[in-house]
Length: 592
Image 1 (cartoon, rainbow, N blue to C red):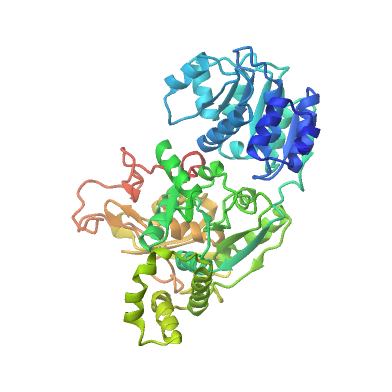
Image 2: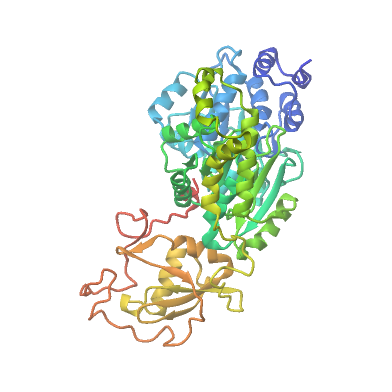
């Protein structure tokens, strides 16, 4: 007997469940479905990604919808286009035997006119991203004034992306007596706030402990120098030949850069972020599901639509800004009862963040060493031997064997094995034979320049000749780094270079932002200072006027340049049309 029958589901859904091969409900399904089927209540369900939340709310919603009526009765809000489409496809599979039931996906990046036509033809269930839904409401293209059920899926991520106001506005167009079902992986205070504001004494269901990670995922961290982060990523990939992974970066820019570097180094990799068109995203995800892509580099927002059960590793190329986000990341692996590994690459100054994550997920991290070149060669060699041992013989080569034997007859079995394995072994051995140790031991290479007050000292190749004094340089750095004034200190401006300090926790951010930073065509270079950076005139001295050259393009400046005015600078292609800084690090754009 299929155990879903005990939950009280109707024949149409049970038939679809059997078609999909589902036999045993997950814990969140066992807890949520009977309540949602038998009670008219609000509910808050806390469960990790990959635990079957879509079916937990999808089955009861389909059961309660009147398919004979064409009006919209159910609304599901989800944070991203990928997740929106995923939920829609799953609901269509669940309801394929329910005559007359239509589910429509509403999301940005597709024709709003076509979506409006689908709704007009009759859509009992709408699955939508908040931004596009609000747009359609404003245009009066959708009517949700009669819905009986509203589902907020991945509520924590929607709020983390800044959709609180959109959700508030959307729910203001819905009936007060509807049932609201909130599903979330974590329970930060923002989710508690929305539950209190929009829900009426909700039933709370928790699978595991709040904000904890999956029990099937082990957690590891590796300490490297900041400049060795990418080299460490490559070693981790080479040390795990069967890796099928999602690599998380904080920004779209980092995501694209890491993916391009991996592709250039011969790995099957691709980027997934908000600057891709919907068609590009679909192609990337199709290739990833088909394992044509072995390493998917993604931002946190774009990864919300990844629903693949066989991911072996999650690699945190950078830790997320929000600790709770780590739970979502690690939830990409260890799914459907399988084990997985979540790896974190950190610099020495970030190690304390690991403790914070441990407190949130209630799991301990294991500190591990980046493997040496010799270890990687050994792993690759035995992996090749294992693959050969498992390989099925293709008998189409039988006709060629006499000629092959004739070429190789002078070699012994041992010599043939050595020659065969040398082909693959030599590739890794030549690359790694002089490989250095990437594990950070005494702080960042070149000196952490810890000033004794917990801050890091930096060198920057701009100074008085570029029109800066200590105040204008500090203002410039605050804008570029998006740091408060208290986070910058000891700004010393010299003639052609300067020094400044930030707290050690911002070290990764500073080095990352200035890695490919240009101002008026000239590269602005920032490095950790090896010396004290003292001596000479302290910032605040008289600024040399631009009478004798020294501008960014090496020409005499006669344009009355003033640093306090709008200055033209860019990070790769991050210039806006007006020459100001387009803030790449905003949550709702650059995290996609």
